[in-house]
Every structure is written in structure tokens, then in C-alpha cells.
Length: 463
Image (cartoon, rainbow, N blue to C red; front, side, top):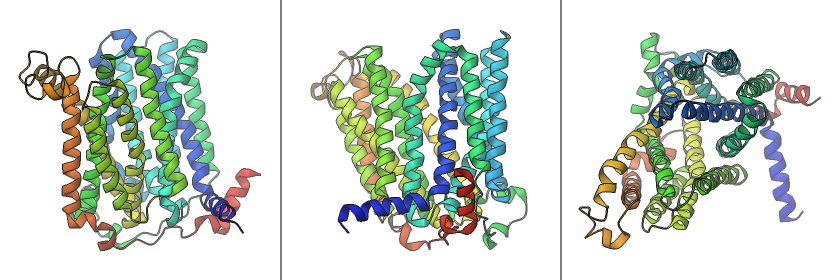
């Protein structure tokens, strides 16, 4: 048998062993495309209605804030409830907010505050859906394929980022806003059907998960769990720092690119960054990642620092685009490797609580990047790097002066901080040896795809 035939056989075996996860993943991908397309249409509607960047930004805030606030409450409940049913109910209830927006639009009563309220309503149920989905991965995927599964999760978001704006624009011109709402509801129903046709293996209740009885102690259990395992806490904070810089890049990209090019070129560049996420997720899902995930995280974060440093070095659209493309390409590797470590080290029966806290910390990092780096760029660094700015005669002689150079300098500082942070993280033994010091939990499914009930589920779906 040739080497190529062996590789093909290995890939087919991986697909077979991951088939339950892939069925769920396809349904969730379709639902995410529907959600992202609706979010795009709502963003356009709010901006056209108000012309306010602040109100436009508030849409994202109301999508994020409930996740941060409710996750500590949602985590313990997710661990107690059936995760498949939790996902189904959360999907259905979250779609009610979208349906309400559609009804208000049709009767001509839709206001901006309705969208804020609907986004909050939807985000509340997504606070239950997200940890349930994340914690279900170890129930559906054998341990050796966790990196591939996490790569597919990143791939899912890359696909939605690329498809949603184009699809949203097409649907707005053909079926208008109410048609997009109908499309969204249809995609949710497809996701629900895929979940109803698959059975998740049961989670064995661990002793750790039942030692605390009060709801308050259970709500804080995920945070206590991480603080007593500093390697895992360091890993979560390290991952969150990457998302913080992603938020900063997002807020800098639009004004920086518009200094060089038109809005149409900006759209193309943003699509390229989405393609980078897609390629990175696809790479991980095929490759499977390194045996030691922490090395992949360190390596990618170090490269990210270099990419950010180069992105701001010169006033060049090509240099900026290539650098941030490469930065985006590494994000799925960082996120999937981080997730794989957590899945290997956290018992399945408490992953809802731990992943809810992890999700809240990471969800807070992204908008924190928006609200800190944005004002720094506009109010501090751009004036410093103006033609008559304080730094024009020093740093300005190296990287240039004028519009956009303050943002370039800020990118370089972000790059230096990332390199410095990675170096410090490497010197922290609890994080560097987290995969050695903490024992692997028992794989929740062992080989779930080979159990009789799992085979029957797959056969019933495909027949």
C-alpha cells in the first residue's frame, strides 16, 4: 500500500469516527450562516436608519454583554441538563427574537431599540447554547481527533464571515428584510433537525462536579477550578489576549485602509481576512495539529507579534494586508489548540461551567480591544504622528508621518507587546508544562463513533 493510500485511508477513518460531530457541525454551520446573514442585514438597517457609528457599535455590545454576565449562571445548568436538548431549546428560543424583529418590520413598527432588545434576548439563550455545544465536542469526537474538530469549529466561523455579507446583500435586493428573517428561521430549523437525529453519549457525573451544592458555589465553580489550576487559567488569559488584539485590529483596519484605498477595496481586504480564517480552520481540520498543543500556541503567538510589527512598519497597503492575512491565518490554530488542551484536561461533566467562564473571559476581551485601542489610535497616537506631532521628528523619521501613521505605530506596539507577552508566558512553567502536569481526563466517548447506538443514529439519519 502506497503512502498516499495510507493517508487517504487515515482521513476516511477520521471522518468515520467523527461522523456524529460532523452531522451536528453541518447543522450548526447552516444556522450560523443564517444568524450572520441576519446580523449583517440588521447592521445595515441600523446604520442607514441612524447614520450613527455609536448606535451601530451598540448592536455588537448587546450581542456580547449578556454572554459575559449570564455565562456563570448558564455553565452549571448546562452541566446538569442534557446538552443536546439544551442546544435544541436554545436554538428555538433564540430565534424568537429574530421572528419578533421580522414581525415589527412587516407592520412598519421596527425601531432601533427593538433590535437592541432582540439581540439581548437572543444572546441570553446563546449563553446556554455556546458552552453546551463546546462541551459536547468531547462526547462526539475521540480524543485523537479533538484538534480536527476544533479546526472545523474555526472553519465554521470563517465560512460564515465570507458568505454572510455577500448572501445578505443578495437577499436584501431580492426578498428584502423579511425574506432574510424567514431564511434565518429556516436555517435554525435545519440545525434543530440535525440535533434531533443524533444522540449524544451520556456524561458520567464526576465526584468533583457534585461536591458543591449551593447554586452560588456552582456558578463560581468554573472560576475556582481555573484559579486552582494556574496553567489552565494562564492558557485562557493567553488566548483572551490574542482576541483582545483581534479587537484592536478590527477597529483599526477600516480607517487605516481607507487612508490608502476606496470602500470597495476595503471590502475585498476584509473578505481576504475571512478567507485566512477559513484556510486556517481547514488546515487544522486536515492536519490535526501538533502533539504538544502548547508549542503550537507559543509559535503562533510569536509569529503574530512579528506580523503586527511588520504591518505597522511602513505606510503600505500591501504590507498591511499580507501581514494581517497571516495574522488571521494563525488564529484558528491558536483557538483550536487552546480548546484541545482544555478538553483534554477538564472533566466532561464540568466542562459546561469551565467553558462558560472561558467563553465569558474571551467574549470580554474582544470588545475591550474595541473600546481601548480605538480611542488610543484616534485621540493619542494619530496626533502624536501628525506632520507636526510630538513624535514626528523622532519615530516619524523611521515609519513616516501623517494620517494613518499613528495607527501604524500602535500596531507595532501591539506586536512588541505580543512578543513580550509570549516570552513571559514561555518562562511561566505552569503554562509551559500544563500538558504534562495536569492529567488527561478519560475520553468521554472513547470511540463514540464505533458504539452500536452511535452507528444506529448515523444510519437512521442517512437512510
